[in-house]
Length: 213
Image (cartoon, rainbow, N blue to C red; front, side):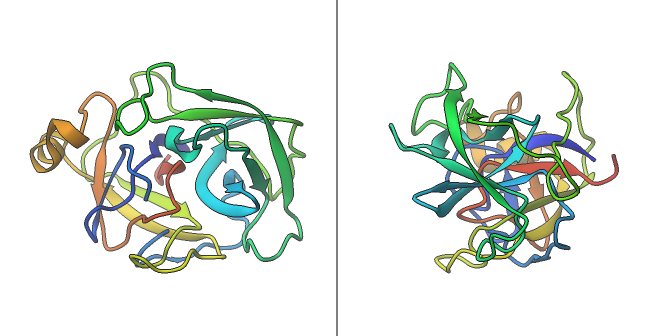
């Protein structure tokens, strides 16, 4: 599998998800097979899940820029499925925070951040990094993709302790732009999707994955 985008925004509408900046679990999804997504990371503040993220090497996590508030100290949990059970998972501190140089708080553009970990992760069957797409690589309309996270299972509901997942399909860029406009949508930086399930608060920063690759 290859990541095709960051899930930087989850659904503002029940069955629509697109990549942007709003801080938004997987709604109408299913529990993921334990450790079937070894690249998934829980980004936490004071040991509480706030955002998703994913390993792109043994010492870097990619997440959303808005997942850090000011000088907030974050940690990441790797190798987890049930966040209530620390077995097989590790908590690692963040050595440095590297937001996109053009990211501005409260704006949807360039909402992306690298976390350099204080130590390299121990790679195993439950902890693996995943490849990023090649520069200029595009995804065709109606391509089946997936999202995952520990976010809310319903609007204003509690966060999920179990990793959840849902399938979505890529929408046409012009349709996305028409629906959301330039205030929320950038054809150059984003894509939007639709499906029976989607993401919600707490899933920001997680990966958007092309299932077929």
